[in-house]
Amino acid sequence: MTYFSRVTGDLSPKRVGILGFDGVAALDLTGPLEAIAKARHPLQQDGESACYKSIIVGLTGKTFVSESGILFKADATAENVGPLDTVIVPGGKGLRQLETSRRAGAWLASRAAEVRRIASVSTGIYALAQSGLVDGLLATTHWRFFRDVAQRFPKLRLTNSAAFLKEGKFYTSAGGTAGIEM
Image (cartoon, rainbow, N blue to C red; front, side, top):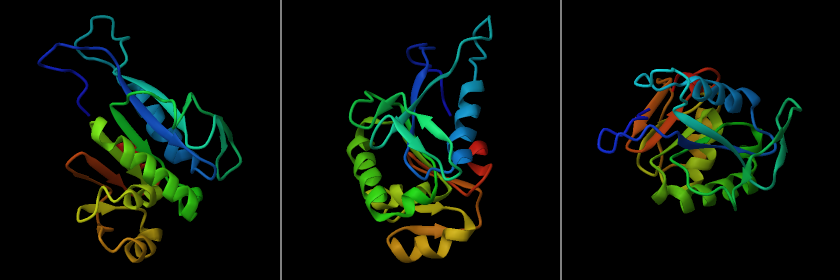
């Protein structure tokens, strides 16, 4: 992930929104969140300057519950989050529910023109595919959901032989720690 603008010399943190919803897979949210929080500018003398400002974005409100029962509190909601550089969509059983997937997909579609990149972790692909933004693009997801995603979203070119992929401004990853590696 590029965090230094060679043109402007801007070292200010980039705003990364991580979408939260009921039924999120906690690791898919917290894994990338931890990785992003550790990133530091190598050009800064103090080594303390963060590359990213992580913002947990609640899809429907400020609080949501993970698959494992962890209660999360969002920093903002989808309606009031403000500008973002990057959006990460974690997976979880919540996105396999049509209404949640549609709502998340519509939000992604509405934000796509103004963000630099959009990433999905594991079954976060359900929302990204629902948005229509990745129609015709190569993507990956968790192997367990590969067949279901392929059937639901036939316009998506899907592979289960990659841990993570980049197609233009879209990043997709398999499950578990692949979202951290991405």
